[in-house]
Amino acid sequence: MSRGFPATSPGPGRSVAIRPAKIADIPAIADCGARFVAMSGCADLLPETHGEIVDAIGRLMAIPGVKVWLAEAGAVLGGLGMIIGPSLWRPSLLHAEELFFWVEPSSPGTTALRLLRAATAEMRAQDVTTQTFFALPTSPRTVQRLYATMGLRPVQTAYLGFVTSMGRIAEPSNCSGEM
Image (spheres, rainbow, N blue to C red):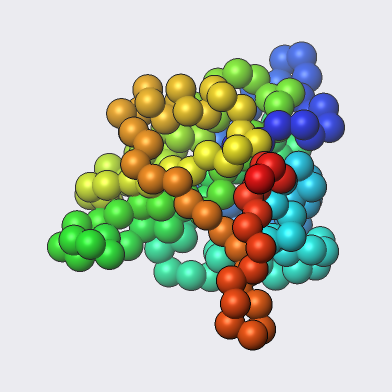
């Protein structure tokens, strides 16, 4: 999830609808993705141009097991992408893993929860046993509370970076820009 996007709200009398994304939604998802990249603190690790974001979303949506839900009220207010497949550690179980999750900060306060409920309904329908969600250092603290409410607990911290062409490990960096 993220924060700091330009104001987008459903406006008076308009409700937020949650629905599965379609291929035709890729440009709108990419628009939100571009705003996310700009505020994420790890833009150097993500697609650089709008076209690259469109291509990346298109590739994701073509992968078997990928599900994307959108929150909208005239415009896209948020989205949640997950991949569902056999657990790497216990292949007899199905696992769902977040690919992306964002909600425009001006969205109604229940938007994130409604996206999560849609994903949970799909997970239950597919007999998913385990799930993984992520939070960036730039994510609002409400994300951690929301995940805890879902019964999730933090189990690891991930570090991302580049390996140099000479096989040396690149200088340490993290998504918050701090060392």
